[in-house]
Image 1 (cartoon, rainbow, N blue to C red):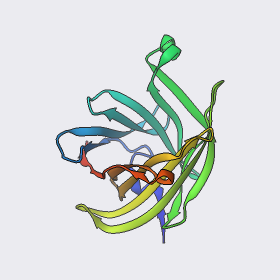
Image 2: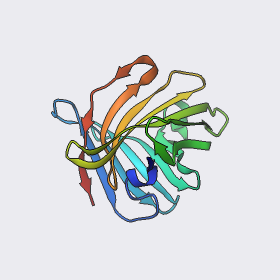
Image 3: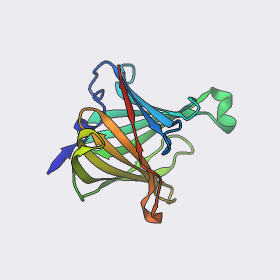
Length: 195
């Protein structure tokens, strides 16, 4: 059976209004480890996935679009570091070809594509995404697709995360993961807020 990525990410990939926030607590639930907020950005015709750190500071914005070949991440904004701070508080990196998240995923059949950051110091990358399992229910959420994402840049180590995506809601569970090194963090169940 095939699962459309459009159905399992938050419903803002085609211009719908609103926002959805996911807070991922530490394993002992003592505090939020990090959060994601998803919303539509009309200026870039993109759904933005904004990640914030445990202290509430901004970590990054992912700019996602649904195109004919599926879900792509074509731009990332992060806090500027080093000499880039002379140009402003944020650093924007676009990728062309973009980071591809797939279109229709089948359990056990990963999809992969190369990507390249633009600009003078742009890096070549590679992303692999695979659907690992589907659950009728998972931690109180219905119709959940478990995916794994791994990226490498300039021939470096593959790292990424595993996500549990509830249909029509988004990533309700998260786990940092480096598959080649068999390193996996603790599973974090999201507290979901919708506006």
